[in-house]
Length: 330
Image 1 (tube, rainbow, N blue to C red):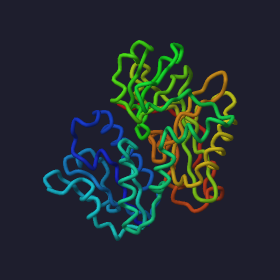
Image 2 (image 1 turned 135 degrees about the horizontal axis):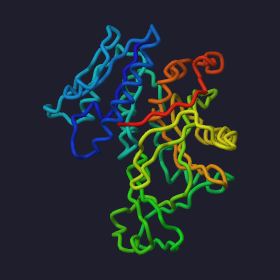
Image 3 (image 1 turned 120 degrees about the horizontal axis):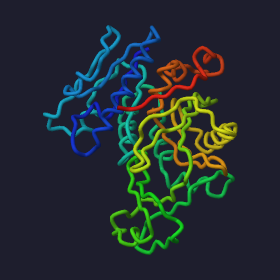
Image 4 (image 1 turned 90 degrees about the horizontal axis):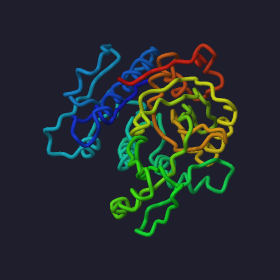
C-alpha cells in the first residue's frame, strides 16, 4: 500500500503566522505517523515536506520517499498542491488545522487527484469541524454543552456569571482563542473584529479527549485521554492516554450520538470534552489526526486499524493496550 502523508506546518517554511509550538507538535505527529505506518511491512510512504524542515525528520528507510517544497516559487501554496503529482499513491492522509478552512481546502485538493482518503472527506470536515453547527446539532438533546453564542452584531448581551469565556472562530484549532475574563472586558471589545465567531462559557473541569477510528460501517474508541492544558492560555501540553474517568461508559454513548449525527466521520478523529461532576461536556469534534496519536502510537499501532476495512476482527488486545501512558510536548 502506497500512502501519501502531509503534515501542514512541516510542508511550509516557518513564518510568524503560527506559533513555534505548532511546528514542534506537527513534527511529533509526523514522527509518530511514520513510526506507526512503517511497522506494517507492505506500506510505502511518500511525505511532503519543506526542504528547510527536512533535517527534523529522523527516519531513513527505503520505504520512505520525500517530496520537497520550497518558498521560491511564484505559485501559491494551494496551487503547488494542485499541481502535485502523487498518482502513484493509493491513499492520502492529511494532518492540518481547521483554521481558516485549511484542512477542508487541502483535503478537497487531494480528493481531486482520484486517490483514496484515509481520513474524513472535505464535505464531512465542513460539517463536523464547525463549532457553531455542532452546538446547534446537540443543544436540544441530553448532551451537555457549554453555553455558547454566535457573535453576529454589536448587541450580544451576556450576563456577568457567563464569564470567564473564550472567543473562537467556527473553524479553528483548540488553542486558537481569545480568553475573556469578565463582562467588563467583553464590553470593551470591538465586537466587529469577532463577527461570525462564537463565544463560549468556560466549564470548570478536567479536559479530555477521545481517540476514535471509524469507517462507513462501524467505529471504535481507541483511547480515552486526559489532556494536559496550560490554564493561563489553554495551550496544549500533552495527554495521559488511557486515563480512567469516573462513569466513562457514558463516553461510548456520546461517541454513538456523534457518529449518528455525523456518519461521514472516517479514519482517525478526535472528540474533545470537559469532565465535571455533572458529566461530560462536549466541546468539539476534530475530524483529523490529533495530538493524542503521539501517545497512542507510543504504546500501540493505530496506523494498523485506520488502514483496515474492518475493526472488530483486526484490532486485538495486543494492539489496543489499556496501559496508561503520559506524553508531553517539549
